[in-house]
Each structure stands twice: as structure tokens, then as C-alpha cells.
Length: 186
Ligand code: B4P
Image (cartoon, rainbow, N blue to C red; front, side):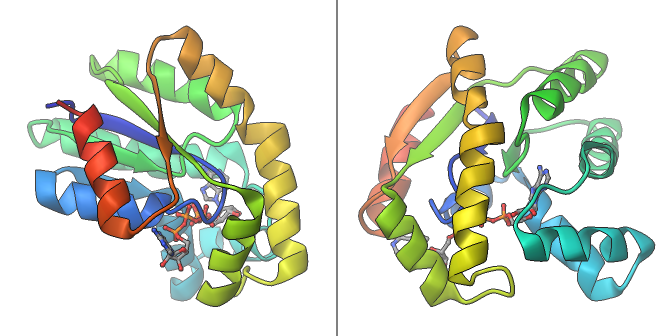
């Protein structure tokens, strides 16, 4: 079973929903950069203060900040004896992907699969509007989709060239999509 995974896809595709489910059932470390940043915002830390306005605009938080968060978590896990992990919402641009590759080389680890969750824009917008998080109003959602197309979508070719990409249809029930993903991990 593959156990070092990335979840890639547009905002609202259900990365967080599926990642949490899979991490629980397979005993993987679930690292959601979105959740970790929101926790910093809620705690009112210096890092959270820096991230808050950027997230509210639907833009990407600085690479250095996100990388520091991911590095510390993966280093901690490796020091504690290693294990599987699932990175959800990271990397989000080519610079982050290159930095992740360097970090994993240092740790002697490799990505085993990149799950690409694919869904139509109309459904994405609808899902996010019904979620209603602070950054889920229509104008910000449209901007997040644009940021995704410009900065994150190039990662599809990046990971396809490395023979790691596994596209998944992200329409359907949570259970149906979960079964499609599990089938890719064998
Ligand atoms: P994220 O927290 O990563 O959130 P997301 O992409 O908007 O949502 P996701 O795809 O995880 O959807 P979810 O499962 O929640 O990013 C938020 C912000 O954080 C970014 O805009 C950025 O500012 C910052 N950030 C995060 N990572 C960063 C990085 N690496 N670099 C820089 N900045 C970063 O699902 C969405 C909704 O759909 C939910 O309400 C869910 O219940 C529903 N849903 C899920 N599956 C469904 C299904 N099958 N059917 C119906 N509804 C479904």
C-alpha cells in the first residue's frame, strides 16, 4: 500500500475531506497546510497574523512560511521513527514542489503517489459557498480558482513527468470518491 502521498486539486475539490478520512483509516500523518495556517490564525501567533490577510484575499501565503511548517512536521515524524504521510494542499506551486523534493532527499524519503482531484468549477464554487468559511465568498473563491490555475496547475505536468500522477473524478459521494482513491493505493 502506498503511504507517502500528495493530494492536489482546486479549492473545494474535497482534498481535506478525503485526506482526513484516508489518513485515519491508514494511520498516516495528515498535514493540511490550510488547517495548520488556520490554527496559527486562531492562536493569534505572529505567523498567523502574517497569514490571515493573505488567506482572506484567497492568495497563497509565502513559500518560506509554509515550508517551515511542513519541514518541522516531517522532520519530527522522521526523528520519531518515520511512517506514512499525506500532504494535503501542499505543494501549491513549483517552488514549493522543488523545496519539498529537496527536503525529502535530506530525509531519504520519496513521494509514492500524487492524487489529483478533478471537479468542474461550477460544483467547486457551489461546495465552497455552502461551506461558508471566512474565505468562502464568491469573489474570493473566483480569485482562489485563478491562483490555482496560474500557480498550482503547473504541478500537474510536473508530477506527470515524474510518473507520479493519479487523476481521480472528484464528483459523487464522499464514500464513492474515497473508494476510487483507495483503489489507486494498492
Ligand atoms: P485549503 O485549506 O487547502 O482549502 P481548500 O483548497 O479551499 O479546500 P479543499 O479542497 O481541502 O476542500 P474541502 O475538503 O474542505 O486552503 C485555504 C487557503 O490556505 C488557501 O487559499 C491559501 O491562502 C492557504 N494555503 C494553504 N496551503 C497553502 C500552501 N501550500 N501555500 C500557500 N498558501 C496555502 O471541501 C470543500 C467543501 O466541500 C466542504 O464543505 C466539504 O464538506 C464539501 N465536500 C467535500 N467532498 C464533498 C462531496 N463528495 N460532495 C459534496 N460536498 C463535498
